[in-house]
Structures are given as C-alpha cells and as structure tokens.
Figure 1: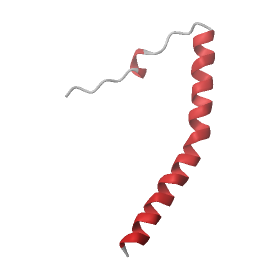
Figure 2: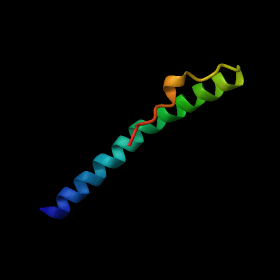
Figure 3: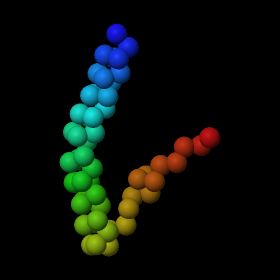
Figure 4: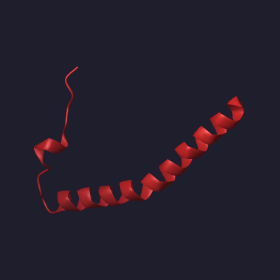
Amino acid sequence: MTPVLLITRDCIIYWVNVWIAPVEYVFDMIESELARRGVAPDPSDNLTHAA
C-alpha cells in the first residue's frame, strides 16, 4: 500500500506543478511589464513574517 500512496502523492504534486506553471508565467509577465512601465511595487507585496 505504501508504494501506491507514494506514487499517488507524486502524481498529485506533478499535476499541481503543471497547473501552476502557466499562472506563474503570466504573473511574471505582468510583473515585468509593470516594472518596464515604472510602476512601483506595493509595499504589501513584500510580506515578511516575524520569527
């Protein structure tokens, strides 16, 4: 049963990565276009968590 669970987990991780890749690509395109136009990033975009 353990090998089946590991394969299932790997398949889920793979498909999530495949689904997210186009979203990341579009997000990077939007960010680069904003930078090209000189739009300053919103300070809330740089979230830092206190340890």
